[in-house]
Image (cartoon, rainbow, N blue to C red; front, top):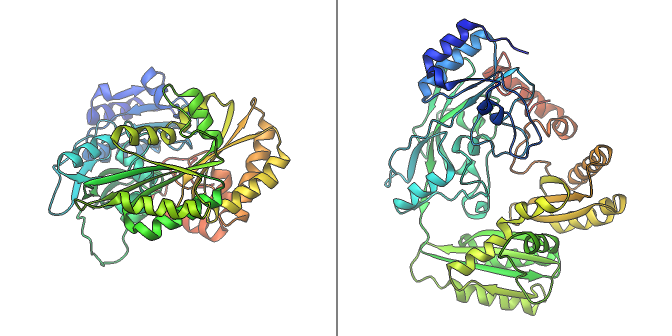
Length: 467
């Protein structure tokens, strides 16, 4: 437990204002100490809400001098406990929620400068109003914040065409543990003056510095879009369909999702208005999005031709091309409501993994894990093309010993298939043990060296990322 002295509290209040220095026992602090899934409930030592980079810098100087640990927090929508304290009464939560400033879209540069507390949906809307696209798209886009998106290198459904957050960041402003402000906001597309230091902070989960502003890359707004929902006899057939569409339509393929039958059944059962998309059940489904920035692009003909060839090869069993935005929205709702639908599936273990050969891995899951754990029911969905699979395992009731054994078996299988135990949600505090188990010692040593350089006192987001 850390005891925050009165002079420190007075100094913090002088920087951010007394109403933004909130006691750890306050309900607002307690809500910031609970992760999105309710798996971690910690009492912060204090909640601070600075309103500018200058205030973040001044706050960090005070806390660094007092040797008080800090947890940077954005929208707190993560799934790994990375934005909440690791211990009760020991860490200050520094919320970026007041920092929502945004400059006008720079059309000639194709960028926008925003503060870290901007909600993703707000940035999307600002880009759209200026006739541009900010393509990051997540289920939590109405509440997640840009700083958190960058700190976890968020991906989402449009990675195929636009890449992860790393590809969407042109510049950053970062405050270090001692209050030093680093300005990498030029946003130059070419700058070969040494090591590109901003890259170190993307995906670092707040362990190296606090992101306060970002210059984001915008893209031309598509003028034509097309959504296709298909059914397939196997995961291998879904991958075959992806390869065909990727080959035929190239960069116009912006999203390609895999969904298994169990997920479709869950959505149909638990989401009002949802229904089974085809007349008969199928083992797997795929959902794809095509878009083009050229007016008059004939996406329908290309999509229908590709589907016809796949049906002739028995890789696609059934398919529907959305005829309007309402139907496209209904198709996407099947995918976007999976997580909500699975809330009624009992005790759920979520594995956010990356696999180079998804069909081979799923075959191994059936042969290995489901044989060893017959009471477990899998629900599978994910992003084909970037290898990101969301493997959900449902148990009838919580069972700590079984869950630990199951998790180790899953991650051992992921490792055996040359995959990653974290594809897009980061490490946080839930996967620190896996970092020690699966990451090569040399890589961990280098990461620790970087941590020491940027945060020698170990005050930024302790208990996360590094074992």
